Length: 239
Image (tube, rainbow, N blue to C red; front, side, top):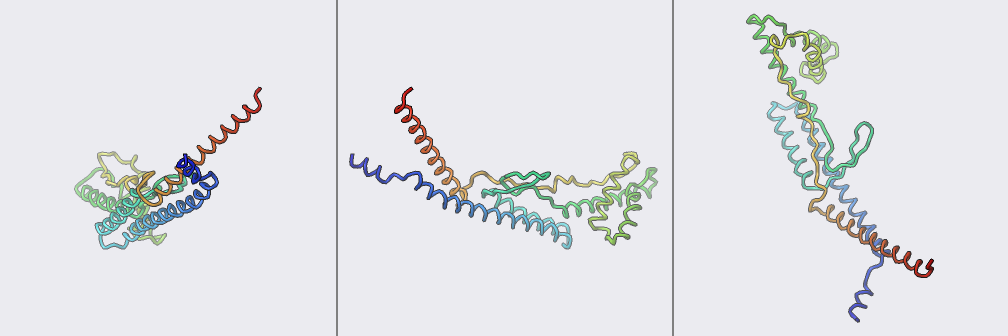
């Protein structure tokens, strides 16, 4: 009996649990924020590597730098709880992970290389008597003057976009057997969205789990108290 009284004496009340929960929630939010900031830094490093690839000595060097940055971002995201707010069509959504991002410069470099290779192949076939037109020459006839007018270089984003647009617009004008199609990569290959786990063995996640458990204990105890109080009312005032 004495042991029971001693245990009951040290039982924490709900208001005491709330005093523990509030700073615990603040600390959890702070650590989750730190993880989000780290993810953002790593994602920015990927986008910076993508941009820097335009100045790299070779495509292999640029792709290697991007791959290394992507691996760091993916490794961190897969082992931490990263809470993020993403926006699509003006609607904000709570997600776990990096959110979608696009390696625009890497795509344009790949598209430029594919167009150049296809132009060369089309010119070789044309020189040997190809009866069909050269879709790339037709696109260049539009885009080259525009590039000179806008001050674009031939490998700039504006010129590549113009070539892609004109090639797509002229595909119906050329018989498929009489034209050379560029192996232009799908843009989806350059879109990424790494998802993080809902729980991971990190300080932020462990504190979040502890906060949830503590909040559930407070809620259950409050519901029990509420049921008891309502029951007492009916006992004292039977109908």
